[in-house]
Length: 476
Image (cartoon, rainbow, N blue to C red; front, side, top):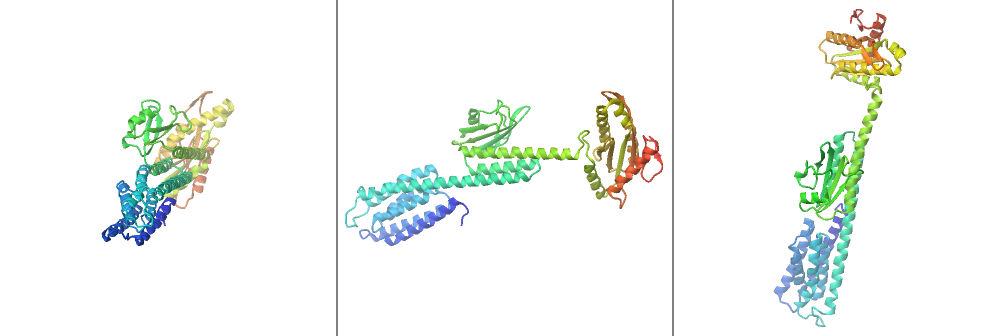
């Protein structure tokens, strides 16, 4: 059983219509006709049934069926015992084809369906009690009935088709909305948006969508489903394309809707343009607009999540990772099995700067110090601020312990270089504790070892480096 409402209606019409035509085979046999004509009428009737099956299987009609079917109806009806019984053939064939025709093909088919019955009666001999001519009231009275059935069936089909498209379109947008809620990456958002836009375009043949992004050089079309491929990368001459410009650029597309998606088309960062070979229904434009807003909102949500995550795991003053983020990175490094060193850094003389120059100067100094520690971290290290004037540095990928100790000594010396602040030039020192990862040592233990080494550096006179487990102080 077909899933769609339209397909189910088509199946029912083709099945019932084909059965009604087959039942007319029992009426073939006009006594005033030759046996050969009776066979011809039966063949025409069987051909009509075969065409109904063919049309259903193909899911569409062809232009050649427009003249062929009325001829078959005329021949089949003329061979029936009562030609007027052929009305069922005309009505049935028109109903079935109305569910598969394009608008133009249906309009072209209607006159043929109307003319079939008078033609069948006109070529039929007198076989009823009262002679019937093709222009008699009993024959001509059938014409409005045939037209009415054709119009009603077509109206039913158009309404059903529109309803089904609306349901599929809404379901497509709802599915895209659910998918967009779950993504956390801009690339995924774009993939979902482009895939859904392509589905909407395929759902409405003759419709094209253009999405353009604005940069310093102006608008650039980056996505154009349903439009010629060469339109991707096109830049309009002005700040926004005009319908006249687009019509001249895309042959056959005469109806264009330019939408700034909440902003002015001349200044908006993202521009949506919908075009059609015929006037685009407003509900189709609204569907593309809804999808565009969904994509934009999803992008804003991802950006907001990224910002919230950054704020939750980075120090608001220096921008360095917080203790929690640093420890996760340290845990991953230790679990990786490579060489890992953790440096605990505590400034010497920071309180004096706060007392003499104020907290604003202290904050300015912390930002400068954080920059120096981040520079020492490089690409493979992680710098963090634990709070106050306490910092940490994670180092990985080093060749030997001497390299770590040398880097710690250089950092300690660098932190002792005077810093120019708005309030004047100040100088602080740093006590650095170094701990190296060893088998069986957890991240918590590693951090505690670095703390102990840092306190040893403080106790040993400050502004120096101490390695955990080694009594010797490394001079700076």
